Every structure is written in structure tokens, then in C-alpha cells.
Image 1 (cartoon, rainbow, N blue to C red):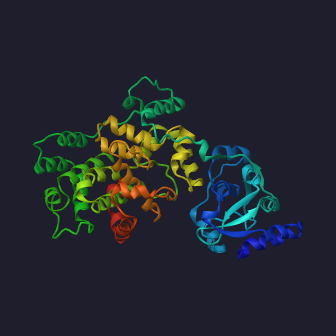
Image 2 (cartoon, helix red, strand yellow):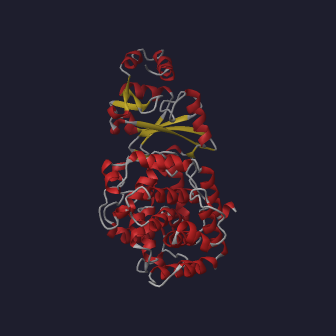
Image 3 (cartoon, one colour):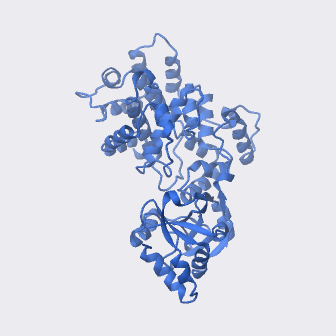
Length: 468
């Protein structure tokens, strides 16, 4: 059955174009698996001071917001979530509908949509599409007096570097050279003009390689930073660990709850989190930085407990990788402040794709490349460096691949629950086997963790200076 809002839109069209009735008879509902990705179409609602604009593009593309604004002579950005949600609720549509059922917004359609002989539009039920003849799609767009142009970039054209990390440094230098007047001969830490590594982090790094280090040594380091000590105690006191009695000190947290390795790596991640300020401009609709960090670290650690001990990655390092998994986001904001705003606006209008496509298109590098490169400069463990670099590359099979695989699984499952920075990507079946996990037990662990949502947010607020 074709949904009523769509048939009503076509019926109003038939008054001026009788052949539209014939085209409507060719419309059918198909399952997502029968809708070719190259012919799927999506829409997004943008706005500026002049009003709203309904923008239609191929699904396998990213809107080039700068180009769109030039072509339309506007200053558009993503409309607030409540505006998009209001339209979805009004027409009972699970995603923002492609056909503009209301005449309130101007319409812009990418030329590649108009060139399709058949289009597949998200229907009013999840995982279903409407197969629509190209003639009808063009007629519907003409009926609303849409403006056409070429303002999106096909995802295959955006070459994200997943497979050649040895090229990262050159790409970072090239990107920086494109946006600054700095000489690229400088070492990475000079080029990035990064603040120095905090003294607490330096001391913990030295502790990692000291074979005689003990609990009291670690407690002494953590306790020299009162806010860090409070955060470690707060973490250990969370109901996630269900520790008997009250946790009164860092030593308590180490001995009774978290253990030496976990506290060492947790403290490292928290200390590094203080190096860079949170961006003043953020991506609307994305889970805040520290909330993502807490969810990812905690869930990755929970997944680790499901893996047989003999093949389990080091839990402390998984926590550290989880806390730092999005650190490159902060680095991009620090290195490219004039351009970071455009990255944010682009991610908002392209929420259907991973932000790496927007970053690669606009900057020439991704947060994973620049974040992992900085971790290497700071002498972080190779497990963490590789985890950050390959967290979006499930095909990576090199050194310490298990850490990147665990981050991939954790972040994608969190995205499926609306926690993260974009739409969920599929988890390849072979990744479950490689990780020593099953999808059923991983999703069950996440459901149990979601029961502690309030506590996760409380932990995140404790880590975020802006929330203090």
C-alpha cells in the first residue's frame, strides 16, 4: 500500500499532468534489500535567516554545504532537530521524507537525482522504500518549483585513507600547509602547536615501564591532582562496579574495585582530556564529547569481560582507547579553528554518513589520522595508537587489530542506540568471530549498560569542565 501523503502529493499533480496517474500506478513498496544503494535518495531540512530549504540528494553522497550556499545564495545550515522531527511526526514518517508534503520550504534538488530513471525513497515504515519512476520524481520536484544544481559529492569520490597509515603524517602536513602558513619541515608536535603533555600523564607513562611500580606509586601520582583523584573515586563508586561499601580513596579504588592497570590507563585518559579545551562550536545532535568517551570506555570494557581470558585484549588499554577514541575531534578543532565550524555544519547536514567523509572532503584528513598521530608523538601505547587509527576500519588485520575491532563494535552498537556521532554502520560477521564475541551477548551487555544511563551522564558531567 502506498502511503497517503505520497498519493495525495501525486493526485494534486495530476490536475496539471494527467500522465502522473500512470506513473503513480508504477510506484511500489520494496524491502531495503531490494533498493539499490546507487538509486536511493534522501532529504534534509536546512534553514537560514530567509527560511527553510528542503534539500534532496542521492543517499551515497554528502552535501557540499559551501557549494550549496554559493549556488542558492544562502547561508544555510541544518534545521533544529525539533523542526525535522515535527514534520516526521506530522506525517508518521520514520525519517525526514524526500517528497516535500508541505509547501513551507523552498526545495533544492541535486541534478543527479533528476537524472535517475528510477528512484528509491524511504517509505513510512522502517527498512522499506518506495520505488518511484524517474519521470514522476522529476514531475514532483517541478511541481514544488524546486531549484536544481550540483552541490553534493559522491561518497566514492571522497578517498578516506583507511589502509595506509604510513601516509598519515604526509597527509596531515599537506592539510596544515593548505590552511596555515606554517613550515611543514617542523616536527609534528611543533606543527600542531599542541600544548605539552600534562605532568600527570608523563609520570604515568614512566610508571608503565617501571617493573617495580606498585599501587602506592600510582595512588601518589593520581592524588597529586585532586580533580583527577575525585574522578577516579567517582568512577570506582559507580553502580556499574557494584563495589561493597564506600570508596574513600584512590587506593581503595585500585585495590577493591578497578585494579592497577585500569586505574593507570583511566587516569592517563582523564589527564589527556584536560589538555585541549572543548570546541566552542559543536555538532548539533551528536552525543557530547565526554558522554561519548564515558559510554565507549565503559562499554568496551564490558565487552572485554565477555571474551575468554586467554584471548582478551588488555582491559585497561581498551578503557584508555575508549576514552580517547574521539580525541582527534578535539585536535581538529584546535588545529583548524577557522574551518572547524564548516566541518560541524557539514556533519549536521550529512548525518547519514560518518563524519570522516566531511573531514576528508573539507580538510584532507580525518580525526582518526590526526588523533592517532598525536598519540604516537606523545608515546602512548601502540595498542592505543592503532585502536584510534583503525577504529573505523574493520578490515584492518595488522598489529594490535583486536583493539581497533573492539572500538568498531562498541561504537557501532552505541550508535544503534543513538549514542555517537552518525548513523550505525554494519558489523561484518567475521569481526564477531575475530573478537571472540557474539552479537547477541554484546547487545545484551549494552542493554544492561543502558539501564545506567543517568549514571553514565553523571560521570561525563564530572569529567566535563563546562558542566561543572
